[in-house]
Length: 454
Ligand SMILES: C[S@@+](CC[C@H](N)C(=O)[O-])C[C@H]1O[C@@H](n2cnc3c(N)ncnc32)[C@H](O)[C@@H]1O
Ligand code: SF4
Image 1 (tube, rainbow, N blue to C red):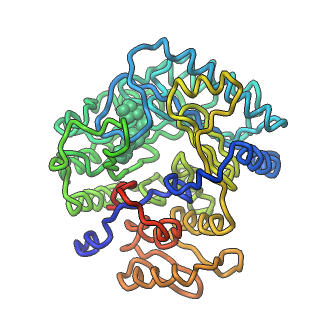
Image 2: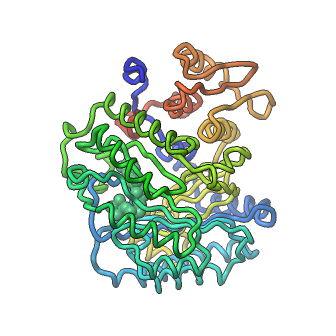
């Protein structure tokens, strides 16, 4: 990896799980009424043909991992489970009343926080409650995030019996010094145990989350972590760049100093080494941060050009409507986004009043919609084009100017109204997307909002 490129392109930049990115949502012109209208329109257009996706945020964790950027509440009091599930089911009922027709669920994901903080009985009650008001698509994909330290056989078999076939386990890194620094001591044996258990029970896709760029982490640790991972042979691997975002209120990123983090060059070297080791082990790189065995559905989606990216990350099934339930969840109806309130107490009081608990959102303009497609194409397929008039927008010439600079550095190839990323350019996909991000170009943030791209 060329260090000059790293220093030139290592800037704060979005991870583009959406366009516009959350800090650029036009919250002043957004209203709950508009959101409901856009959602209903998208639902009527697509429920019968492609169904909808559901994301349920389960925010509780028993202990704080100090690297974590997710929205969570730390508690050991399991009495919180029942009221939370009751509130999520109330929120779901509010949506079903609005949509009028029975939703067909094509994809359902439990994320967090830690879904396995909840007992298997409570998770079963939740899922059955969701399907009481909906139909399950015959090819419905159901997945959950499991913490290796608290996922039990009971969790796995209960969720399997409910139709879950995919599970992702948070591993991060196996080195003890790194684990201590991030306050997440988790021996290899735990991960081995839950991975084997999931397979025995019948899960067809087991995924491991790994991270590079953590405090005290070096290339040797990444090498050793991947060697151990290879033995367990997960179907998918998310190989995330550590997002250092300590300015986000209450996210708990502390317990180590900035000086304990690897330099950008070392972080990039960790990525390069990890990627090489994963490719040698037979994994194929899917979009940004993801690797899959050729037998996994994500790889099949990539070769069939059906790979999609949303707030849950990469997915093989694209639906126009994704409803996010629970605190902080984001919903997407292609024409608009909304995000729920983050506080548990305000979430409860809104659903109890019969109000969809949206805090903010954005309705996309025509320009936003076109740029959204380009960014999605880049993030999923590393290429995009504006051969059809539908993919052109007024400010395209300004974008082209920025793309020419990226071409000079051999990160992309511009050809016949299209661009394709080179293999040298792929690690910089966020930077290429930024060339299209007109909202970011028009108003640079006054303080840092995003993690660094390298
Ligand atoms: C909600 S957690 C997974 C479920 C469960 N809570 C656990 O920790 O095992 C989702 C994943 O997000 C990733 N993640 C969290 N914070 C991150 C950060 N700051 N940078 C990069 N990845 C992060 C981790 O890989 C983590 O496994
Ligand atoms: S990494 Fe998982 S367990 Fe740790 S604080 Fe974040 S959500 Fe909770």
